[in-house]
Length: 511
Image 1 (tube, one colour):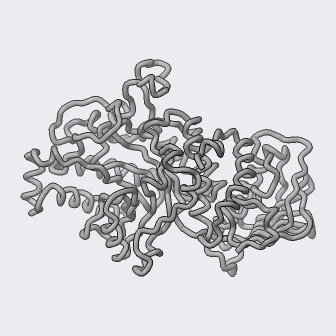
Image 2: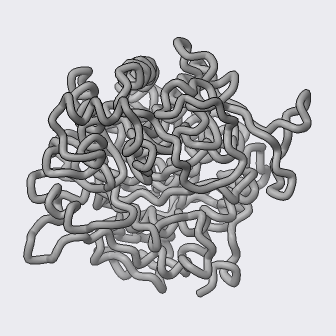
Image 3: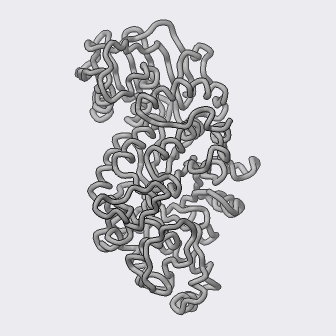
C-alpha cells in the first residue's frame, strides 16, 4: 500500500508501494547511464529523453559514485517478470527488475515523476529535470492489459498506430489487439489472395461520416497495410514490450472478403464491400472445403508475420440463415453426423483451434465461440451474452479476458460509460465462492470505429477512459481510489497536452 508521504508523487497506474523521501536528483548533461546487458531498454531511455532534454545521456560501462542512472537485472527481486523497484536518491537513480520488461515499466514510472515537458518531441530549454527522491516497489495485477483498435471500419494508418503504442507504453499496457478484418474492410496484405486488398480494402465514401477519400479516387475510401508495414509496427510494439494480437474474423463479419471472393459464401453471388454498419446474412460457407483451405492459407501468412502465440478469430454475431438453406452445409452436416447448423459453427471453430494448435499457436475468440467441446486452451474474450458458458469454460481451466459491452467499450458515448464507471469496472464473472478469479487474466477495452472516422475523434473517445482502465489492469484492487485517481489525472493529462492528445475534458466525461 502506498505510503502517506507519497502524496507528492503522481503515477498512473498507481504503484503497489511508494515511499517518498527527502530531497531530489537532477538529471543533467553530466549524468551517465549504466545499463549492463540491457542495451535495448537503455537505448529506449536515451531516445525517450533526447527530444525534450536536447542531449543524449551518455552510457558508461560501470556506474559512477554519483550522478548516474542504473538499469540492473536482479533475479532475486520478488516482483515477477513485469515488476520493478525504482530507487531515486540524491546521488543516483536505480531501476532494477527480474527482466527487461520490468526495467521498461520502471522507466515509465520514472518518466511520470519527471517534469511534464519530458513528453515534448522537441527541446525544452531552461527546464530543471528534477526527480523527487522515492522508493517504488511495483508489479501488475493482471498479465493481460489490453487495448483493441478496429481499423476495418475506419483505417487510421501507421503513424496513428505507433502513437497509440507509445500511449499504451506510458500506461503500462501490454496487449495490442488489432482488429484488421470486418465487413467494411480487409486491412492486411495476403499474398496468396491479392483481391482481399485490391477489392476488400476499399468502399464507397460516405461524406456525412467525415471520411477522407483517396486522393486519386474521390469517391472511394480505404487502405491497407502491406506485410512489411505490419512487420514494422510489430517491431515498434516489441520495443515497448507490447504483443500484437491480430484478429481475422470467421465465419462472420467477412463481407469484405466475400466481395473479393464471392465463391466462399453459401450463395456465391458477387457483392460490394458494405458501406453501412450491422450484421450481414452472407458469411463464410462452412460446408465448402475451399473455405477451410482459404482460411488456413490466410492464417499461414498471419502466423508467418506475427511472432506471438495468440491469433484471434472473432467468432461473434454469425447469422446462420444461409447455412440452413445451403446444400453444401446440409451435406457437411450429414457427412459429419452433426445435429444442426449450430454444431457446424462449433465444428469450424474447433477445426481452426486444432489447426492453430498444430502450428504452435493458440486460438482466441469472442465468447460466442464457447462450447463444451472447445479446448480449454482457447482464450475467451467476454463482451456480451451467456455468462454461464463462460463460467463453465473457466471451470475446465479456460482463461478469460474481460471486455464487457456496457462497461469497457470506448466507442460508447460518455453518457453510457462515464469516466467514473470506467474506473470502477471489475471483470468478475463467476461467484466469489466458485474461486475462479485466477482464470480472468485481464481486461481489454475495445475501440470500435464505425463512428470514429479520424485520429482526433479516436483520442477523444479513448482518453481519459483508457487511463482509468490501465489502473484497473495494473494496480492491486485494494490500492485503487477514485478520488486520488482524479487528482493524479489532472497532472497526467498535462502530459497528454504535451503529446498533442485531444482528450475528453472532465465536463465531457459526464461525471
